Image 1 (tube, rainbow, N blue to C red):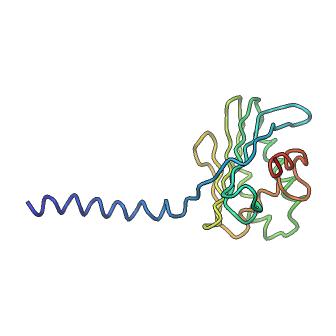
Image 2 (tube, rainbow, N blue to C red):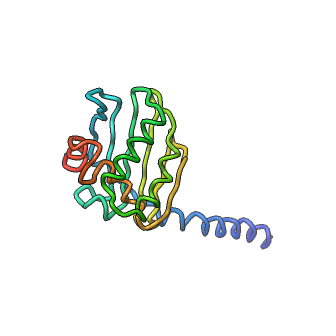
Image 3 (cartoon, helix red, strand yellow):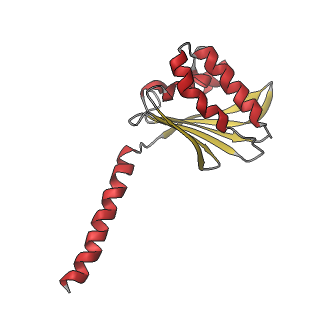
Length: 167
């Protein structure tokens, strides 16, 4: 009888060991702001910004942008825009080379699709999700600089930057 109880207990303890490290690094993000996503004066969806602490600087914490689309957008448009705004906002070739691989994972979206871009500060990792499925991942010291596309000195949209960071 002692063996019958010990086996389930050992299984419970060992499975807990594998769950704890993952949840220990997961940060809880709070929704800070939401804004319309406008391209060439046309509303194509909405963007939500979430962070550990809404008043804290975006580059010093875990953050997330979620893009919900109401229009069809081709993959090339995402790639071209991401490449363009990364080059405008990041001067270092080393940083650019570390971030550019994410761009090749963009695909076409249609009405109802959702892209989510999440940076985890403790692990310095960036994940790109499409409709809840992870499609890209990078881990390096420059990972959070990808958000300069929207929050840099020359962002995709000054209005969107203001709406998300100063609601």
